[in-house]
Amino acid sequence: MTERLDISVGGTKVGVRVAARPGGGAAGAVLWPSIGEYPVYDSALYGALTSDESRVERFRAAVRALAPGRRVLDIGTGEHLNWARESVSCGASGAVAIEAMAETFRNASANRLAWGLADRVALLHGVSTELEIGPPAEVCVAEVIGSVAGAEGAAVVLADARRRHLVPGGVVVPHRCVTRAAAVNLREVLGGSPVAFAPEAVPYLERIFEWNGAPFDVRLRIGDPDPEALLSTEEEVEVLDFNGDLRAEQERRVRLTVRRPGSVDGVLTWLRIACLPDEEPLDALRDPTSWASVYFPLFDAEVPVERGDTLDLTFRVRTGADGVHPDYHLAATLRTAAGELSATHGSPHRGRGFREHPVHRTLFPA
Picture 1 (cartoon, rainbow, N blue to C red):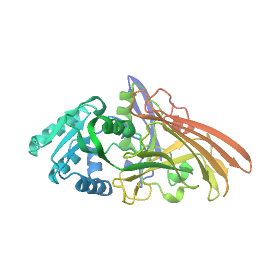
Picture 2: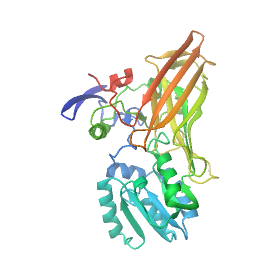
Picture 3: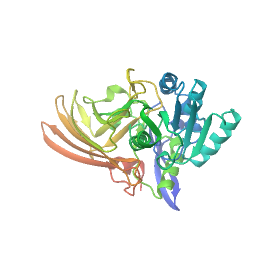
Picture 4: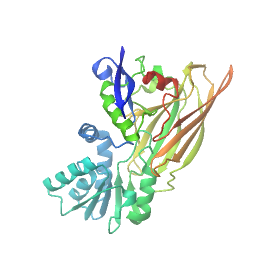
C-alpha cells in the first residue's frame, strides 16, 4: 500500500509517493534518497553512523594502528569528533578536526569542551579544500565515503589533503574503496514491495530539495537488498585508491553477463571498502552496515533476459559544478536473442532534471 504526501519546495507543492505503513515494512523494502552527499545530517543520522559496528571497528582498527605518536587530520569529524577523539585517546601527538556544517560544528565545539579535548584537538569550521591546517599531518582519516564510493567528494577532498595537508608519505584512511555494479530488476530488489519512499525519508527529501533550490531526480538508496536479486555478474565501476593513483574523474567499461532468466531495468551499485591495505574489504551488499546500495535506472520498461545475455556498461565519473562532488553518467547496451537495446542515465550531484525517468515519475506523482 502506498499514499501520496505533499511537500513544499520554494513555495511549490511536490508530491511524494510513500509506503503507507510506518517504517515501510521490512528492512530494505522501500527507498530513501541517497543523503550522504548533502548537508542534511542530524543527530539521528549521526547516531546511525556511530552505532554501525562494522563500519566503526574498521576505522578504529586503522586509527589505533596508525595514529600513535603522529599528528592526525580528521576531515568531516561530525558532532562527536569521532576520529580526532579516537586518535588522541590512543596516543596521537595531536589532532585537527574539520567540520563544514554549521550546526554540526556548534555541537562538536560544545562536545570538545565538555570532553576536555580543547588542548589536544584543534577544531576548524569550513571545508578542507579551502582551509589551512597549520603544520601538516602524518595521518588523514576521512569518513566521507558514500554508498556510491565517491559520491561525497572523497576523491577531490583526499587528493587535496595529500597535496596540501599531509607530509610526504602521509597515510590516508580508508586505504581503498570501490563501487561495484550488477544488473537488476527494481521490483525484485525491493522484494515485491511497491516503489515508494519510506515515510521517514520525506523530511530529508524536503531538505535536499530546499538546498538544491528545486526538486530533482535524486539517487535512489536501498537498504539491505537481497544479494540473490542480482541478475548478472558484478564488476568494479569506480575505483578510489586513496594511497595510490587517486583519480577524481574516471571512466570504466565493463561487461555484465546475465546468470539466470529474468528481466532487467537498471543496475544496483554498492561499496566495498578497506581501511588498511591487508584487510578483507567490507562489502556493503553482503555485510551488515549503514552503507546502503544505490539503484540507477536505465530502461523505461523491464526487458526480458536469459542466461548468457550481456549488458555492456560504461560508468563515467566527472567532477560536478561545485568542484568537489561527482556527477555520474551511465550508458548501457543490452544484448539478447531479441536484439540490442541501449539506454543512458545521468545522475548529477545537483540539478534541475525532474521526473525524467519512469521510476522518478512514479516516486514524484504529478
